[in-house]
Structures are given as structure tokens and as C-alpha cells.
Length: 323
Length: 291
Image (cartoon, rainbow over all chains, first blue to last red; front, side):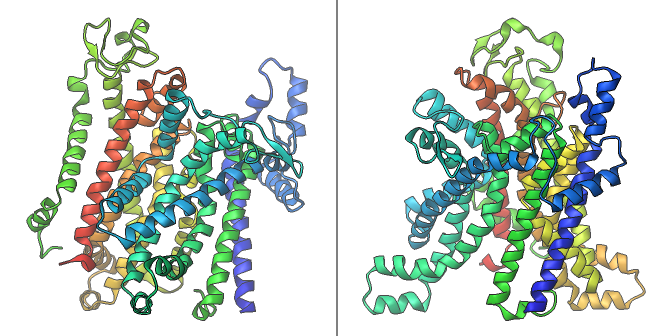
């Protein structure tokens, strides 16, 4: 087992190194940041000074070596646009993204699983068909389009929910959180629902498939024979049995929800990390782009690593060899 | 599938009225998009046709051209119906090209990996699995940000984000075929291995690949729209549906919904219709669901 863990860790580190190099080369090969940083009428002296200060006159590999060295010390450079360290810039935007993503994934689970279980329990009822139609829509309609419809319906036509921004926040542990105030919750409602729709469709499908399968199993037959009410069977036994795949997906999807948050945050002007990356792409703020991509790659490698390790503890066959 | 034949396939397909309707919608949209320049009241990208006096008019408005703008006009005075039909051309083009390229690249890679076996197979599939663990949208986003705007760049980004799904499917199907007797027999003849792979193994992997392809074409169209909406996809000279929606978005808050909503409706109808056709094809090609 220990050998397996070490092997996986080394693999993850290698992948991380390759990713950081790819990201760095890719980002530093596009555009010319000098055009963004220096106004066209700046004199030669200012130009040279800025180029030297940001190290833009160095060869690419040297810039990468410096970048990598500083990365290991947690220093990801300074944003060209905001003039502050990238890491603290991203960290300052992270709470907004985290509360949005967590709320979205949790509500997707809390709403999606019961709906899916119902659809699996009564597969032929019209309500179940409506639930499944909803999940097909949730899968196929692009997130940004749902966001636009939500803004149009709730903010423009009905005027009951705000179209963007975070609203009033409360400072806890030095960072602002929206979900602690009524105004903040109002601002959270639409983006969180928007972000959760895709996951909800997935949860509905998963729990429907699981429930349908388990309802035919001996477990349920014996539970019924023992005189348990349908309610207890569903709530206690079926739910427990379908929860394993759901928990796995919940964990895995947390990462991809962060990716989709880019779209939702842009539509709802939610000041999170996703909006930051879109803004920094359009202003060619390269340190922010690189840092964001490296952090996301890191996050996904960590998620994959933990999934691998959890599965290895559950299934001894995977521990040997390559898996 | 060869034995069943195309007409039998169609006979089964016909039994699902929803899928037939969806197929009709897809065909209609394709025809409209291809023939758009022949019957749209204006070429929305010929500036000579545009009049700012017609800008942001609601649906049904009769503009300076003397004809009704059934879906209204956008901020440049463009007839939205014409703009949507031209936009569909671009969206469909992107979806089909990217989907087709991803299919060929992914299938080649997957089948080759299955044929090679051993370390090469393990390495290829490990890379593919790794890529599949990243969401396609993130990958497409990053790539189009890195490559910049443009048709070619976007096609590269979409293909790179999607080929892995085809590779995984092709690999699974080809691994199953690899161990069958007919492959063994073909390999024992002096035929070159490449010929065996592409003439004998690949065709037998097609049914699952066709299913993935329908889903992925819809996904490519949706991804392209998302990227263009975020300003990362096509340049302004190639206005796809996503860009039309993005352009209209800023007028939404002032109640001019049609500039954004109608291109979106066109996009959704297209994507949902393709997905419904794909669902039926999947059910028919899935041996486990055979009656």
C-alpha cells in the first residue's frame, strides 16, 4: 500500500510539473503584455524600466525557472493590472466562489436526490416523466443561457431578485460572506440555482438509476416482508445504498462546478475567481492567468489522487500494479 | 448493425415519435442554415443593408427596408431573423467540424492504443483518463484563451477538449474486438497491421462512436456558444449564436429581451433536438436494450 501511495504521489508531482510548464509556455506565448502595461506614449526609459521590473526581457526558460522557484515558495508574482500579489488577489476572491459553488452543489444534492428517488420509485407516473424531462433540459441547455433566462425572468420581468453582484456581506474571519445576510442571500439565489442546475440533473439521473435497481433487489423484498413501511424502506435503506455513488460524484463534481462557476460568475457579475480569470484573460494579466490555471490543475490533481487512494483502500486489487 | 441494415434501423427509429420530430427539426434547421443567403430578407453582415434608424426595434417592426422584422432588430439595426440564420450556419459549422475532427483523432488514438497493447496502451489511456478528469469546458476555455480568437483556434480548442471521449469509447470497443477470432485470423494473413486495424477493427467500433458523436456535436455547439458568449470564441466577424446572445445581453436589463432571447431559443431548439435524436440512436444501438 505504501509503495502504491508513493508511486501515485510521484505521478501526481510529475503531472503537476508538466502542467505548470504547459500553462506557462502557453500563456507567455500569446500577446504582448508590454502593450497592456505601458501606455503607447510612455518614453523609452519608462518602457525599459517596466520590462526589467517584470522580467519580460529574459528568455522564456529563464522566466519559467524563476516562476517555478517562486511558485515553490508560494509566491506567484504580482498582477499586472491590480498591482498586488496574485496569491492574495486570488485568495481574496476565493470566498465568493466557494460559497457560490458549495451552495450550488449542496442544493443540487438536496433537491436532486429526492426527485431522482421519486422518479425511480414510480418510474411511470407523469410526475416522474416531468422530472426526467427537467433533467434532460438541465443537461442540454447551456449554463449561460439558463442564467440569462433567470435574469430576464426574476430580475427584469418580476423584479424580485437582483441581477448581479454580491449584495451586503458580513465579515467573518476577515473575509466577507454573502450567505449571512438577507440581501446577500437574495443575490446568491439566482447564480447558485443557475450553477446547480447541471449537477441537479446529474443527481436526479444517478439516484433514479440507483433506486430503480435497488427496488428490485432482495433487500427491499425482505424489508417489505418484514412489514417496514415504504417510507422507512426508501428513507433508511434505499437512500443508504444509493449514497455511495452519489458521494463519489459529489466530491468529483465539486471540482467541475468550480469550472462552470466561470460562466455563472461572468453572467451575474459575481466577484469570484471565475470572473477574475475571464477579466485577466481579456487584459492579458498573465501572472493571474498562470496562477489560476496552476491552482486549478493542482486542485484537480489532488481530487484525482484522493479518489484513487480512496478506491485503493476499498478495492485491494487496485493497489498492485498500475490500476 | 450490418446485418440489421439501415432500413430496419429506420423502422425502429420511426417507432419513437419524439425522436422523429427531433430529427425533422434538425433537418429543417440544417436546411435553413445552408440555404440562409437565398431567402433571408437581408445579408446581416453587409453594412450597406443596415440602417441605424432600425436599431433595437421590437419584433414585428416594419423597417426602412419595407419588410417586417419578425424577430426585431439588434443594436446595429440588423434583422434578427437573418442574423440568427447566419449564426446557425456558423454554429453548425463549428459543431460539425470540431465533432468530426475529434471523432477521427479520438477513434484513431483509441483503436491504435487497443491494438498496440502493453506499455504504449497504458500510457495513452492514462493521459486520456487524466484529461477526462478535467471538465471539457475548462479545457476549451483555457485553450481558446491561450490560442486567441479565430475559427481555426476555436476548432483546435473544441477538438482538443472533446477527442478524449471518442478515444475512451473507441478503446473500449476495440479492446473487445481485438480478442475476437476474425482479428486473429486477419492478423495471421500477410495483410499489413494498419489495414487490419482500420479496415477490420475500426468499422466494428463505429456504433458506440456514432452515439458519442451525436452527443458531442451538440456539446461542441453548446461549448462554442459559451466561449463566444464569454468573448473567448470567434472574432466579431464570425457572429455565431453565442455572440448574438452576448451582444443582446447588455440590452436585456432595459427590457429589450428579443436581441438575446431569440438567438438563444434557436440554440436550445438545435441542441435539444440533436440530443433527443442521439438518445434514440443510443437506445437502438445498445445491445442490452434489444428486445
